[in-house]
Length: 419
Ligand code: GAL
Image (tube, rainbow, N blue to C red):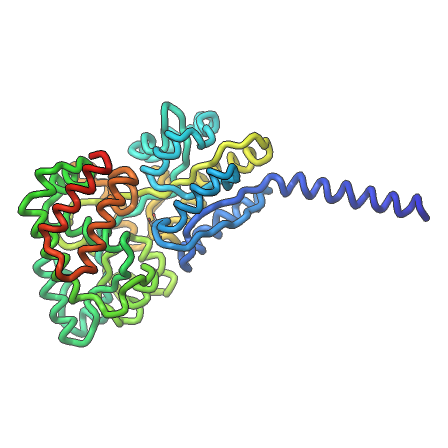
């Protein structure tokens, strides 16, 4: 009897050991993709990894553009309990790279020829100090205007090509009892609006001077006053419940026809597709006012945190390689609303707006009007981006603040952020 139970016990022990070995080859993934379409996209990756024998341990931190995740991740790294992987924008890859906490993916990249399959402009963004330290999942465009086509047809308006037209269209929507602009009052969403107004009013060179170079003369210019004037006008085009609203709830307003327009990156299209909305039938996509010919880009990447655990590192490498799987790139980016980070994925199955994004990016690259997004950590470092977010959001929410006060605060804030 004793012998039998010992045998069973030892069998159980070895079974649990093999389970635990397999379970060790797991990845804890920290991300902020918690909306319906984002979760659906991530699920494709989760399933692919599970097929490859890697267990997924989910660590979501809700809050658009990672507004809450950054602090959580920093705390985890500081307490030496970093997750296996975390979602990061282009500038964040550089920042974590500089802190020396990212796993070197160079050998894998070499073996799989990443330099031949990844869009060439993305390679410097995932490299730090000559090493590949992250893997890009996609490219998103932030200068989009989404509009509810049925609402537009009913009110008899066309998508606005300039900010002046935007104001006229908005007045008509208001008169018809429809909220013109679906917005959530969160600093990053207001900054998203700001970058579109900067580009639409000032053009590509002005945008670069302000967002990338933080050129003081441009920030103090008359053009910048016009940008803030336009933002002030837009106060009346959002509904009373906008404070704190998440971006995907704003997209729902568009879906339901409660709002006419949303200015948001093409992750909004992920939600529109999930709701079975058809481009050019139920909704339309056009470049944000005044930004035709420009492509404001941002990328989502995953970086992996250094570990001494060989199994954990194996899981990280498997995840990095799965992200560049060609079929995954197609399935994921169709759900997410973005375009692939690989150059060789067919766009045939993408919808009208996805194809337009792809073509517009190619064109903008030729004309040097492909620009990095400020609100999505592609244009500038965290300290300077934070100054823009604070000032723009305070301006939008403080009705008696003047453009001059906003400009003065920007100049002072950027100086102390090390302009
Ligand atoms: C962006 C991110 C997108 C999308 C969006 C809303 O910054 O790059 O993938 O998730 O925020 O959270």
